[in-house]
Image (cartoon, rainbow, N blue to C red; front, side):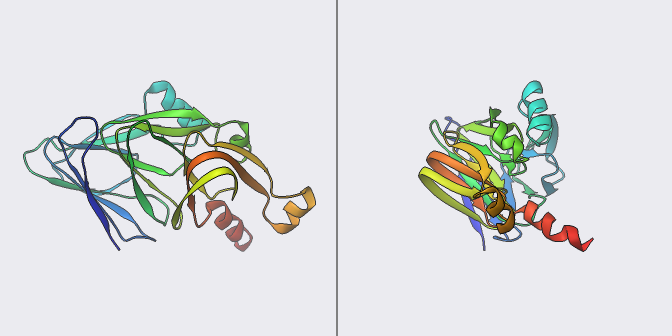
Length: 236
């Protein structure tokens, strides 16, 4: 299954970024065609192959202090790679994620921004700003960091998940099992708590859950890395 498109930035630029997401939903990869002068920024280690003529530059993710906060408090990579086509011909690059699962391309327009759980971000086009947002001690208790990666601006953002991705709009309160939340609108607040009472949470196997509140979009993954680890641990 393929998803493709040509993206035109909303920042007044005239360049077109052609992309295609192949091998969905289990082994998704991003196939990008960069025309002369175009570039894409990607998480360290996201590149699987590229035309040799593309140039690559490594930078701190979002600047020195944001990069440190994302690395030590948010579980994100310290660096990002910027791939640029400095030739006079179209060049191709393939990006992917380390986990098995789906990938989505999110078009940020207007004042919209998005927050990612650790490991979800893959890449973005020019016009996108990378920063961090305070996630709270509840997120830290759940093992998902004190800060979240926050992307805003005008452009295209690629992110992935372990398993399939479901987009859901919430208005009020919503409960998500810990480890299944991938991304969410910044206006949504998160509290981590027990699924039920102490005894019920332990015996049911649900443990901690994310109690979300607010209005906006959330993105969920159908599988949980933590769940996989718990399943495999007794077998080793």
